[in-house]
Amino acid sequence: MKALRTYFKIRKSAVNLILEKSPKSFTPETFHTLRVEIKKMNALFDLLNYCSKKFKHKRIYRPFRLIFKQAGKIRELQIEEYLLAEQPNSHLLQAYRNRLQKLETKELLRFFSIVNKNFVRKLKKKYRKIIPMLAKTSKKKMNRYMDERRRAIKKLMCKTNFKKTQMHTFRKRLKTYQYNEKILNCASQNQSLPDKNILSDLLGKWHDYEVVINHLKKGINSNKTIPSETKQLQITKAILTSKRELLFNKINATLPYQTLL
Image (cartoon, rainbow, N blue to C red):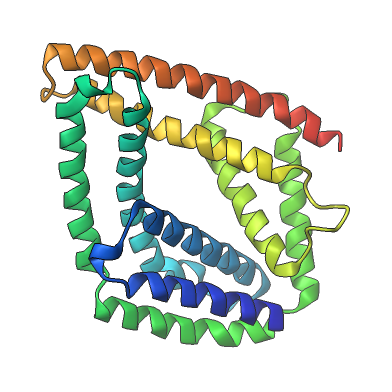
């Protein structure tokens, strides 16, 4: 299908462009963009896996998953540094923030040791295996895939409340649906999920807080912090936990509204 081939070529070019950049030109936004592009690629793989028994999702996605996870480690540290810098008395956490920067440097070195010319060549071999599958994918099967995914998401949205353990899984399903919806140009259809962008953004912010809070817990329980720093980490964790809870309640308040539309 032409729409799939076009979309895939755009994603492939975007990923290649990032991976061929000089390490010095990478910014926090670069890592964010790379992860978004890989998410879009993986959403497409999910669709192809549904439409073709010959498509080996796990095998095809393996190298993408490797750099996605490593970029994720870096991205999480960058988000934590950003959120901590925003907090009151952030200067009292300077030693902790210095450790975060050292850890980020370590993860950056790991990332760039993976992403080399040989790795990019391996990805290009994967691309050649994917392209024939795109041409064989029928619109009928794709529409059936979207219908099933939409129904599954709406069923989850009909719950009175989400449990915190369900949030991240739901977010991933919703993002996969959103990305594939754009391929098939379904956004204007009546059956499209309402206000999903708002919900997706709220879930993304909630997840950022969740990741940082869990990392702060490790910092508090480690033997690397002095008492005064530990106290400030606890205060910061309490502030972020309060913000996370507000987002959690906002997300659950949004769900019943969306199911009525």
